[in-house]
Length: 145
Image (cartoon, rainbow, N blue to C red):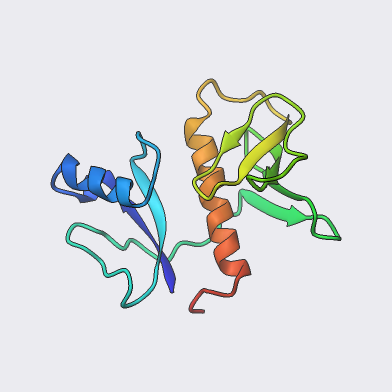
């Protein structure tokens, strides 16, 4: 298995991109997505461009508590922040403030901003979501190398 990044601009028509994002259950407005490709099960379709094998960017750190009951993501580049990762069914989720639901049904909550947050958080939170997916992918030992 490996990760591929597909972009809206890789497709000849907006209708095809809409079909792909609907099949992947992505929120509207995404212009690119990282997907796990399982050889033989998810063939590369016309228009999909495999740019590279995706690696977890160095600007992201993900960790969990010693007992494994709590998990965080840290963005080490400006704007720096720490956020807690919660499962959808967690009763302890969030103490207020910003909450962001990811496509894997987890949530980012309890943000601690070390720099002023940007006006538009959308792309930064989508990058965090992508980093978590890549981390989980490597954590589960699903990579080829």
